[in-house]
Image (cartoon, rainbow, N blue to C red; front, side, top):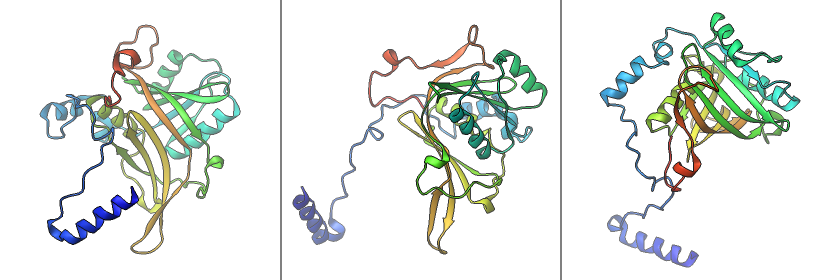
Length: 272
């Protein structure tokens, strides 16, 4: 294989400008089944939806993000530490513990205190395994499966503790209408104007419907060289459902539910 590769390289060098273009390797991503709901930024319908959806007040700068982070009942140490570290990533976020209160009672209290979003971290066998994100006061509510959680002390070559500067937010590869809604949910957690002097960046990268979260700091080595240093925490999310309105497990109307047997019929079919 190496010999064939060297031979092709020599042929390209010999042909110079007349050499044929390099073949693009086939990947699951570039062979993705086309989704008719793929967002076109110039589409008038998309623009109308953005101007009138539940996130419009945030994007019109009419609201300032204020986030409440809570847990399932009686959280264990790892979940508590994860919530505390998540609160250092999202500015103006506050950690409160449930103490047996139902979410239906918590949500009206959040709205009365001007919280714009509620994050609930669920756990199983002492490990964080789920995240519920509810945009207030009118929804929607997203349910995610959470995996691959790494706290700061578990990340190799991690940087110093994050500062209180507002981070830059990067949203990658949310291409469908559903993905666009999820991306807008994540964006609305953070204040509008990042403080670039802090050199911190929060990334939500969607790949094959898995959303990878990373929190980094830029390190400027020289005028031409820049590196990144992971600060943590890190985790991976998989959307399970998107519900209209705030959390309602019994009577909630769902915009989208992941049904594995019906939806996962092809490895090249993605929903976000």
